[in-house]
Length: 246
Ligand code: URA
Image (cartoon, rainbow, N blue to C red; front, side):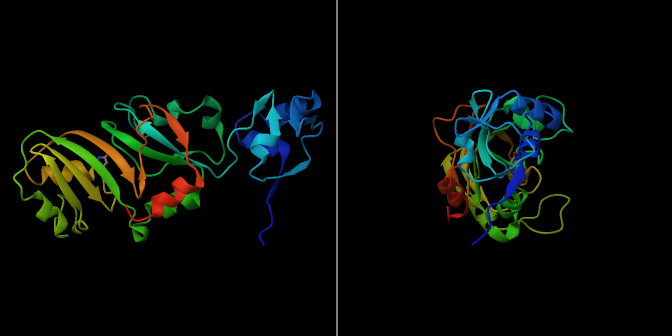
């Protein structure tokens, strides 16, 4: 049986972005941190990091933020960027401000372009992040693309062949599945995460992607009721769905 990890309360809350360790000591002293309804006067005590802590530990009357090791989905709106290197609002600005001060920090699981919308996963769990993006896991990503020009009808065969070489690369793309929805609309499922991959695939056919939206990662689909800019924490079943065949 694995042992439940423990942490000093001041360290846990400081790393979750609540305040400095010193300030947390003061919060505790002033009775503003409660466990199972009773004040916790000493923030240097160790506490077991069981999942139910999120409902048992209350800071200033508010239930605890997600404990370290969580994953969420964002319906990424157009115009926000995943990279600190690019200009414009960041996907991190869409998180509650305290979550942006966490250590370990929350990172995006791969990236979507500034002008791509849809399902973006974000986590503070490095091992889970690597499991999802690892090429050996073959987690598929499905995109809906609207194109500037009608497709020729030969795209599906070309993308499925596993021989398409993108400009500037020395390894062909893995086979990808294309479903034509209309002359200028397609669903494309890819199993890699190369830079601007979908846009470059259509560019290789002489076309141009006008809008791009990610609908799913593995077997996890973006829920229809998750508005652009909204976030939702993943359940264990959602996480399992990522790795389920899609
Ligand atoms: N492919 C792209 O071209 N852009 C994305 O954002 C994702 C996949």
